[in-house]
Image 1 (cartoon, rainbow, N blue to C red):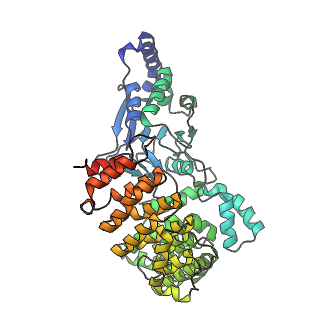
Image 2 (cartoon, rainbow, N blue to C red):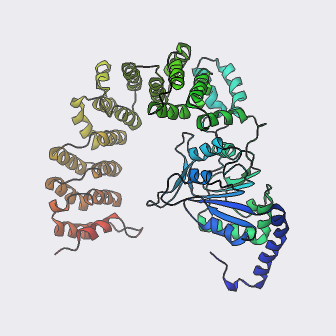
Image 3 (tube, rainbow, N blue to C red):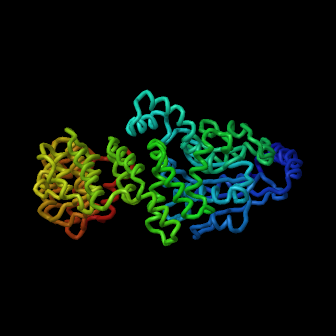
Length: 559
């Protein structure tokens, strides 16, 4: 927002003085290009535009609406940024390449994958858009979060033990390796913006755009423009974001302990490398200690997936891929680690990668996945997460044969896994569990039904009738939430729910009933009677309008 006239002469004078003070620095440095990447709020960008004079700064918005390759487009145009301002929500929860800057607006198609930033930085390190940056401003949550994602000493030590090292040796090696494989969100930004003297971002929650712009206004009014133009790191900006986690770091340099890690990361992305040379690098990486291989697993997965879809059949690449497939020593170490890990999700990822690398046939892959399922089934107590894992893994029913080697199902959790493996005899037990008094059993049944939905009207009627007999309100809500995933169209089932509404003991149960009915087939409902029931028997909400009000509006007033 622009400053209104009534802010007074003193404030305007202060702003002008700040700009005049900054002018010599601008003139000495020549014109500077401020690149903006606006995938969400434009408030921060506008604050920079208000206070950095056009006589010394050119503003270039890199996002081209409707064009997915806009960052590459900027690279091809020869755009060179002196200052970079990125505004967007940031998902930095893992290092798998899924993290990105994105918009809060569902209809927006603009986003910035960190992988793409990495590719541009690695492929054109000397003269690309990021090559001459003096300062970077990252307006997004966790952009400079320092928490290690894979390289915490404890995580590395765990991997080292599973790959054959003694606990004492693993602890020692982990302390040495951790600084060399820095992989937090902050580290990843430092690697992308190599040699940049000042990178500003947030170690946790960032303020929303309008709030951030207000803070920036105060900073610039106090002379911040001069600091921005100088291109030197300064801590003054941090003081203008009270109660927030704004922090400052610098880009990585060749003398840093993790410089080798950055170079390895770039070998996955650097477009100057030939496909054969990249395959040679991957082969060499796979020969390293499995603790290092584990740290690169996300990138190895993406590489293997890309190679599987390649249209490059050059003899050089084919020869290098064959060398990987034929490397029995690397394969044996990889498979041994795959068997040693007790993380079943990680096991599945390793199995799939091994097949893509040519180390497992299709049948061997299924056998390995069956081994993982059997190991999970052997646990004495199974949870909804275990059931979700197996049901998802067997979505294609390729592992149905695995149940032949499993023991009998003594409880709902084991019954659900057998059912996910095609044992239809377990289904009635799971449907009954949905309306049982045990919270854990209800959750397991709810997960199972996400993969094997209610099949017919009889099942829906049995479930709604069972929900009406439940005595625990919390379990009732969970059962109703599971039912809401199905578009109930059976009149008898809907009448069961309508009769339950006035008998409900809590507003949460009534809201859950409304959640089922609002997704139901209205033509099967006695609408006038249902509206009267809703109006007469509903608990009043202390939170204003709720789902019950929405349902009444959808149904309309009774005739």
